[in-house]
Image (cartoon, rainbow, N blue to C red; front, side, top):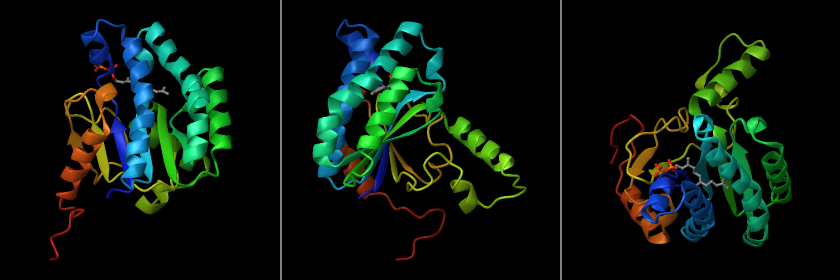
Length: 227
Ligand code: FPP
């Protein structure tokens, strides 16, 4: 079982379009689905889930779409707090969260603090996140400390969430075969599973399919088979 799964939640727009709804309705349904998938992941013994909720490139989307996504953050934090406390879910974030509007940032900080001691499951939200931005931010932290050279293990300590294991499995919904600047450093040896299912429709059965596929993978990390 993968300890850490990361998900590229794509297809909200197409899900909405198919129903004749605005794209923002797709994002709302997508935000709602995060909790379903957290419950399903917990049930199947996964400890950490990272979800790609907003990328550094998503700032280029129309203002009303960006605003709608930003408004979903406090809504999620307030609406899901009770369940997170009941189920022992800790909320964390990765990304340039200083760039988020104050309301979203404050809601996140509040929920992160309130759930900090929950230890059954970690929901890690990538917000204003870019894999390249993360690497550049890490390099700048290093330079500020006056470091001249570094090892891979040391570099890990400059990332946004150094304590999290690399994701063993990355799931992408919506059918596109690309990483879209997600976890560039951490995905070096991740297994990648792409499904055509749109994110708001991604269910426990879809997660189980991904986990079954993962179980068939032979993870060698560049080595050779030893048995
Ligand atoms: C990609 O679908 C999805 C996003 C850019 C945003 C993902 C965000 C959520 C699922 C909700 C976020 C939750 C919170 C609490 C902020 P797309 O819009 O590119 O879909 P399309 O490819 O079908 O157009």
